[in-house]
Image (cartoon, rainbow, N blue to C red; front, side):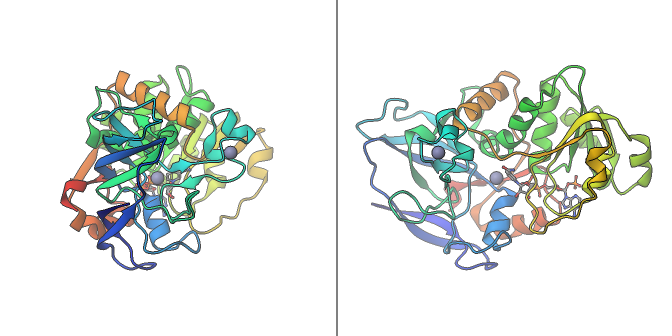
Length: 346
Ligand code: NAP
Ligand code: ZN
Ligand code: ZN
């Protein structure tokens, strides 16, 4: 076991503070990673505040991890000391169910082991990326391509794959009109990726406050959902809408913007349910779907795609002591566009 410094929430809704945690000894197939950067995902905040239900405390959040391999177990074949690597939202799964076997470990039928706020196969709680080091089985570790700096690569491990996966699954590409709802951490990655895939991209944000940024990120159009004219003008326009919104919103209104046979894919995980009039899907044979992160193979594909297209996250690099303030800014939709903790400051 190794004792490492970390930032943790001691209890639900309590501010995060510096502490120490134990990392397991490096096992046969484990990789010890010196964490360099950890992104702050809105999911960290939902969980640290028990917005999704009962959680495990103390909680060390963080599932957008980028670092360098410091040690490998004797059975490790994929990584060497010095490799640039990442870890996302899961650190294990059953490896035997049909979803694991086809590389969609995120939908493991026996449940994934989350990077934090979960219990590992050793029976111990898992702790995430707001820390100096982490020990992870090599099969759940990703390679960060040389062309990507570690700080802007960290958010790809959740925000990147969570948007890449549905964009790829629902065939965003040339000739497709794609709308991204919410220009936050996930939303800004969705705009960059959909643009790189060749789609015509529209941002639907609460206001026009971030319009200039949205267009620079690769959007072709930008509209405010607070303006009722948006819904008149864009009715029946999109092949695909990806909603990244962290709070309940009017999905009926979003569905009215789809073409016949269009799909609205939700990746946001609000704490409250929504009400939906089902007439919004039956007229126009529309699909309302969801999507959760991505499998290990697809996450590597996404990292390689981002390196090839020169895509990293737009980040505000902060010290660990600024994490509580950063949480408040995320909650106020005041993030441009991902906070990343420099873990050397922990
Ligand atoms: P974020 O950076 O806070 O972005 C969310 C964006 O949603 C905000 O920037 C804002 O965009 C919009 N928004 C917030 N409140 C709103 C409201 N009341 N009405 C309308 N729009 C609102 O959060 P994130 O890290 O991107 O995460 C977004 C959501 O996805 C969270 O719920 C998170 O837990 C979830 N998530 C899911 C997965 C998955 O696997 N499915 C993975 C990661 C995260 P504008 O200012 O542009 O309106
Ligand atoms: Zn996340
Ligand atoms: Zn499984």
